[in-house]
Image 1 (spheres, rainbow, N blue to C red):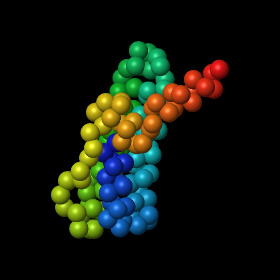
Image 2: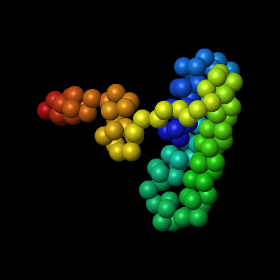
Image 3: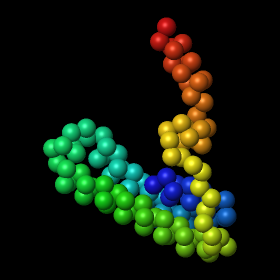
Length: 114
């Protein structure tokens, strides 16, 4: 899903219109809902592991379908190579990429707790 989000941004930067991206955004949203549902149910993996795996599988399928559609959209807009993706392999790197100032947020949280 992260890659699909970043590739959507690349498509937007290349001039893809909102109506072109509507189906992609729906797929990403549906993939995210399924992922969130599986992750939010803290006992899901223990009490219903097969169903949880099935739901996660449909999430991955939808995210992958979004990426296939994005590849076609990007090609229509002249981008046939890979989208340069940032390293979001750790929580800290992902937070930095999206612009979270963790020191500032921690200070605000600490101040609010006083």
